[in-house]
Length: 339
Image (cartoon, rainbow, N blue to C red; front, side, top):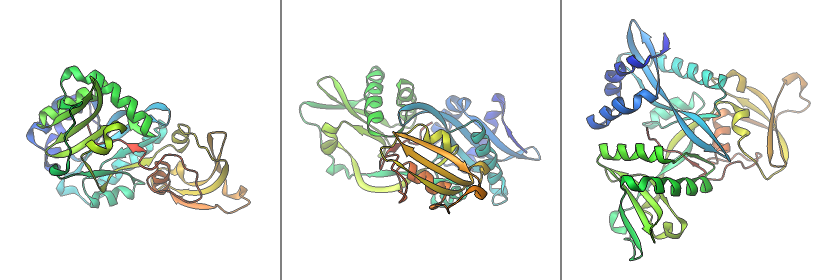
């Protein structure tokens, strides 16, 4: 049986969570004491035991020029005694169909390893962004006399949010809302994990920040004036965030395009039946229109045949498909794994 846990039950998945994830005790305490109440906890239950579970966390995001919210899939886990029996597949099929019914534009997750990534691909997910590595410390330049670098304090968070929102919403097509609430949560997280948020200040103005835990850079945002010299990120990258379109019309209405034309696509989706079939994409005057076509009414064969994952990767600018208009710029997706 698949069900959503009541508020008082959410703590009961902690043994399953701890079995599947090697988190620090401090982080697990922090998550279950301060964050899990904000999540929808979905479980697959057998004979009174939670055999599989995942959590849905609503995240405020900017998609194109509009503010929206999407569900981040977190804490995907199955009891070791019940793995490879299809329980997680049942969970994903149910939640994705429910997301479609409430017109979620897309959803995303961060796979813990490539084996899990391959499983998520079977549910229509595709990589949409990479995570950069970190330069060797000796290669990282120190600030000049006019540029100050210091640890962020609580009093800095309002100004930090103002800088982060203005910069990321200008630079990226899809990004999480980095508002004051975001940085309050980040400050709590780095304090628990003994990390830090460093800010760059020039003339009393914040021009960049870096969030770091255990020598790993979780997030770095620098103004163009200092990015070339102060960045600690290396050119080496690895696939990181996976996403999948849920409601096709709802995601495309957030974007505009410069090109004009149309293309007929046969789309396949292994989970959401409504996304299967032929769709006419028409674009012009900055708008994208999508119309589903009946096979018997088609005069011509579709010009493209795509999976929902391939279309997702194209729309988010990660892996372009020839014959489709550019929608997001390359590296235009900037959402990370924070709760």
